[in-house]
Amino acid sequence: MIPLRIKVEANADVPFVVRLRSFEAEGLQPTSRQMHPFEAALKRVSTEGAEYVGEGGSIRVLGIDPSRIDGDVLLVNPRRGTADRLIRSTSPHNTFLVTERCDQVCLMCSQPPKKHHVDLFPYFQAAALLAPEGTTIGISGGEPTLFKAQLFAFLESVMDARPDLSFHVLTNGQHFSEDDWGAMNRIDRRRVVWGIPLYSSEAAVHDQIVGKSGAYAQLMDNLALLCRFGALIELRTVLMRPNAPGLPRLARFVATALPFIQTWALMQMENIGFGRMNWKALFYDSSRGFDFVGQSIDFVRSRGINAQLYNFPLCSVPEAYRHLAPPTISDWKRAYRERCEGCSMKPACGGFFEWHPRDHGYSNLGVLQ
Ligand code: SF4
Image (cartoon, rainbow, N blue to C red; front, side, top):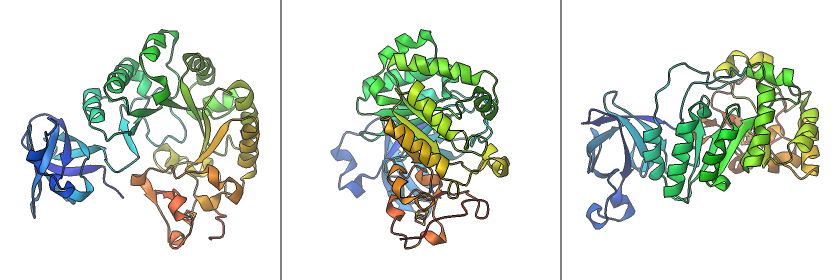
């Protein structure tokens, strides 16, 4: 698995953000280029680690080859001797976890909520400004809009400074209000996609899945509000036993009541957090029961709505739908199995979550090509 946290030694008292550069690997001398104040350049590599030096001091990185972290943006915690790789320069999967608090308790949540919150927005802002050109940064939680003022201020400031960056914000959609007109008008709405879950067209089913009474009604109000804001919406539906039979009804609802969305994403479950605890009751084996999924996709597509399959191994999907299943599992939590060796679809396939159980998953994976 790709490590997101690495060991470091730094002579500082407080956390800081730094971008690592290996100028020699790029055919440059550190002196031949004005270094950014938040950058540190690789000086030497020894058995004691890779030493980087910048305006803010020096930092030693341990246990990872410098070629794997060139251009990465780290949040260094000197007291703990660790650094979080906030931006991995060669990865398309960079996400800032802005809080672990949430007001919902979804049955399959992969990141169960915690009460504790530390405001890291100043560090995220510094890191985003150092991101490679054209990066799309994910914002996730917990529920990021519990800290809506900070979130909007972050988006506005970074997007002003970096017109090349885009954002994908995962939110439960519960906390928008008419008061957000000003903030929405101050950001470039074409560069922010809001990923919002809806699990059923029936309020009771949705509310039961998210563990919050009234959540469906609030979500309906706020989807309408986001439509008026001109926000880009990716509607997300995790496929589970309680909502799979209702999927064709949800498809009709999406096509008639929510035609303004950009994408409807049908998603497979992740076996971690509450998803692991409730796996037996929730996991829907779409490799055997694809009919609900196929009918639903066909319906919304016939109405001009883009539908996608997220987190589905390609061999679990009938051939006619595979072009709708991009490799969405993040690189750092993606795994392939023995059966994947020599599979011609591997370059286009996202495989499995690293923690997907070997004996409690898909029972009808297709013949390999
Ligand atoms: S790479 Fe693995 S999971 Fe993907 S289609 Fe091939 S066998 Fe299936």
